[in-house]
Image 1: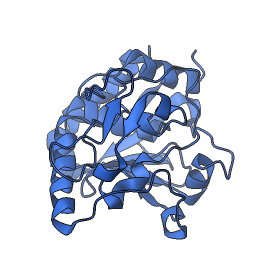
Image 2: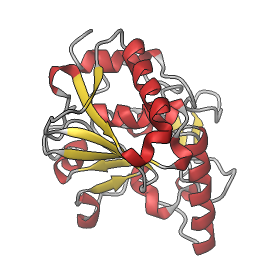
Image 3: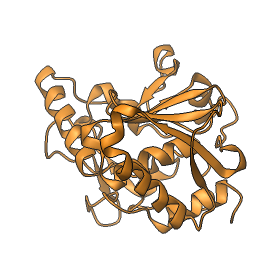
Image 4: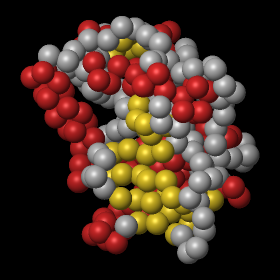
Length: 248
C-alpha cells in the first residue's frame, strides 16, 4: 500500500476508465468464480479462506509455527534483497521480536519472494510448500513490503473489517468493477482493536479507483481522505501481530 503501490493503483485506474469498467454493487455476494482460489485485491486466497471470510467456514488467522516465517528471495531479486530484509527486521523490532523471519534452508513451507504479479501475497501459513509473495518494480517502499508480509503473516485489509461502515464512507460508483471484492466486508479477527485509519493494512483513499485522483473512501468522522501509511506500521498493526502470535 504505499507510495509506488498507489502509483500502480492509479495505473489500473487509468486502464479501467478507458474500458468503462466502473462501479460496484455494495457488498454483493461473491460468485462461484470469485470463490475459486485467487486474488482479492493484492491478497491471494484459497477457497477455504474465502468461505471463512464470508462466515461460511470458521475464519481463522493461519499463523506460522514457532512464530517464524520462513522465506526465500529469488536470485533475480538480489538487487532488492537488502531492502526486503531491512523491512523484515523492522517488523521484528516493531513487534518486540514476537515474530521472526528466517531465510530458508530446506524447510517444506516457505514464502518465495518473486516478481510478476504486482504487489501481492498469499495470506497466512498454508502448509503446502512454496507460497509466492510478489514484489514488482513499484513495490519496494518499506511500507509496501511490510504490507505484503503482513498478509503472509495472516492479516487482511483494514477497510474490509465488518465494522468499517461506522468509520468509512465508500463511494462504490468510483471503484473499478474488476476490483469490487477488494471492498467487500469480511469476517476476521481484529483482536479487540479499534478501527485504525493509519494502519499499513488500510488502502489509500484512491485504491482501485476508476480514474486518477478520484477518491473511493472518506473518513466518516471528518470526510478526510488521508488513509493508510506509506512507510510505517501503526501501534495497532504491531499489537495485532503480537496478539495473533501469542505474545500479548
